[in-house]
Amino acid sequence: MHWRRHGRGRIVRGPLRHATADRALRLLLFAATLSTVFGSCPSLCATADYAREERWSQEIVPTIVVGDAVYLETPLRPRVLAIYTAAAQPKGGVIVVHGAGVHPDWGLNGSLRTGLADAGFATLSVQMPVLAADAPREDYSALFSEAGERLRAAIAFLRSYGIRSLGIVAHSMGASMVDAYLARGDAERIDAWVIIGMPAR
Image (cartoon, rainbow, N blue to C red; front, side, top):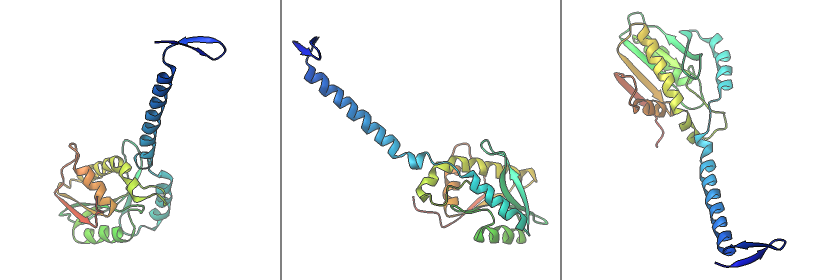
């Protein structure tokens, strides 16, 4: 231990060189931690684009010819659009889940929900959470938890109609959302799950 003059004649005690080096090391470690946290934030911190969902709802609901627009309630959203298509004597119910960045009556999903109803299955095509149009696909993993709550609400809706035999047909990113939900310990039991083009993990 030794004495050194520091600043305007002030005397301080201790090895200043070592203290300065320790402080610099702590700052570097802090900066590295921030870089790790915020560097991963784009995917972990992505949030659903509810305005985009609302625009689609306003666009497609007036054009529905087969089926009826209904609204599900989840912990995060009091009104989630879904399209319910009844079957005369339902053999069971099927939840139709779309892929990334589209809506419940989009292309393949519209065909599935109406075709399955014609085959005797009541269908519920659900608006899943979406990101902004320019968001990378890998950011969608941040929405899986919210997607699970929508699936839970969809299952409850069909069961409220007395439908006990339930399946899910899911396309693309929707299949990944269903996969994440079914892996949860609190997932509701279903009887069948059909995957159409689930992205590789």
